[in-house]
Image (tube, rainbow, N blue to C red; front, side, top):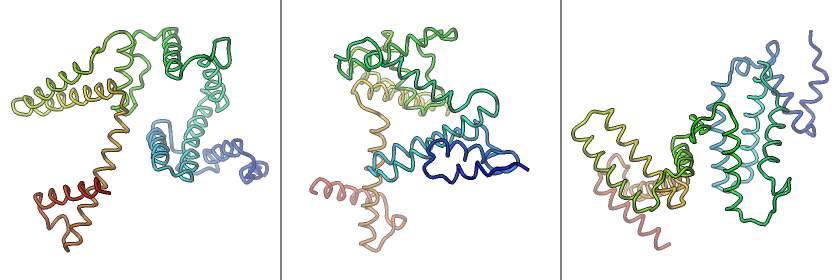
Length: 277
């Protein structure tokens, strides 16, 4: 029988820091004494949780809730520990290899801090230099054959669209003026209407995707984060629709007992009240 006395002492030591978390993860994955659910997981099954935790970190930041941010950062850290534990079990790498790799990358990509380059440059220039270093790293890899290589296929589609467009723009494939992007949106809107009226569902979905892609490009040209803009629009819609529900409740009605004309009028009333407040 395995003696877990040292391990038990570590996992209950609140001052042990990261080593405590690593040991907890190892114990959860122990094939003899671990958690059946944790033992069954693999990289593919855990990946959705990793993405979800990253979004929950962003949500806590947007809400300005530092207590939630602390907890969500812990959940996100657990995802890194989880993947590293599975990788170590399979003989690929260990958590310390992950730490070493990101530390080396930070040194490599900040020569103005850890090397001989001057720090006398703006944050914007540093962003340009960062991308140049990344491009050089990609070019040094034998599998790198395209300017678009390395843009992860698993990114959220809107984020990936921006990254693909940025990569293409760096090699000159971009509209020089925002007005040209707006013109393209008009063109894509007409094609979307034509697909709706004359083509099948696959063609309609394709045209709709083209429209979204160009809208993402417009955000890039306007220096807008499209994900943040859409989150704000979602929040505004939620706030105003709840306002409509509240006004209906004052009338003793539920949305299901109302109609579009009434709810649209109440929507305008909510907007008016917001502007006056």
